[in-house]
Length: 208
Image 1: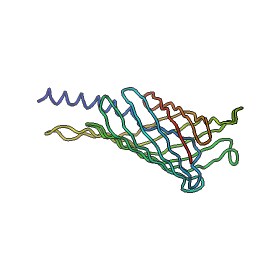
Image 2: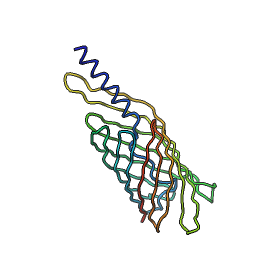
Image 3: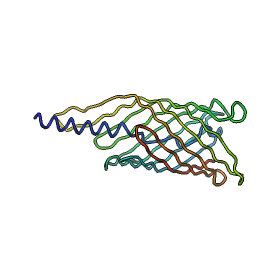
Image 4: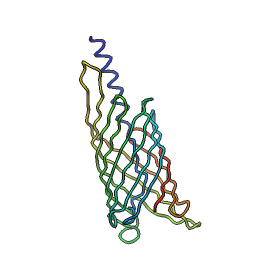
């Protein structure tokens, strides 16, 4: 029995270590909000160590400087496939060039991911900054960055007679990328993830 308990302890320690390094959905947008009544849709691929994520996003502009979005997709974490769902609301407090030489926004976000036997729930706040630069072609490139502070709860299901095990921690992550306008309303983006470990997200956004 002691050997079984020790084995489960080691497995759980490895699970918590690997999951705590994973924040599945990135920023994938600049600090600018969607125009009132407008929409943005996007699709993305994210890669981290032992993690692959395929997900999409829909954002809607509720009012000037205020929008919200939902994200949904699939993850492969340590060879286990699962679902991931997230949402956020964002308020832009500074606008380039009217109130500052850059755009700045605050947001609150929540994310839920489930794979066998792990579920992860996190919620927190974000500070997002970005800056638009006009190219000679007339298109725009917009570097952006986000700092995320969150509470994260990880729960691992165990077979009977063992009880489920959970752990709650506070985490911090940084997300830095660039948005490239390639056609009217059509954008490509690349994003680096620094969240306990390194990752990269690539995707497309289309606004209408």
